[in-house]
Length: 93
Image (cartoon, rainbow, N blue to C red; front, side):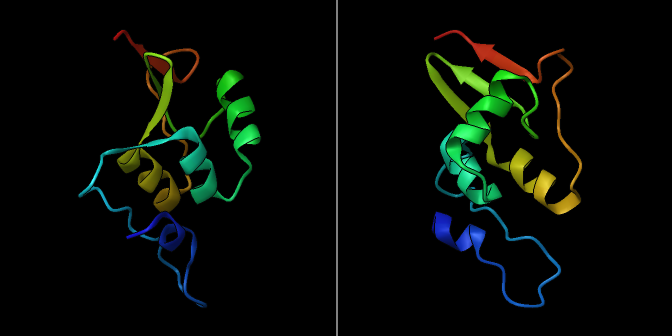
């Protein structure tokens, strides 16, 4: 399933698209922004303010989103958060 497939819902569809976890369990912040239909700069600003709808993992200098978290948000509309004040996490590499 291509990233473009994730952003295309059939007319009259009431279910969110499934995210393909078979190739990779994470995606970049920019890819998540594309799925959500927002500009990557908007996603970056939301991340910096700690307001992105799902946890953002900082792995080294890279920002990653767990696809399962994004899928859960798309299905429920409820923001997912780590038990931290910023909603983001860091992993030293």
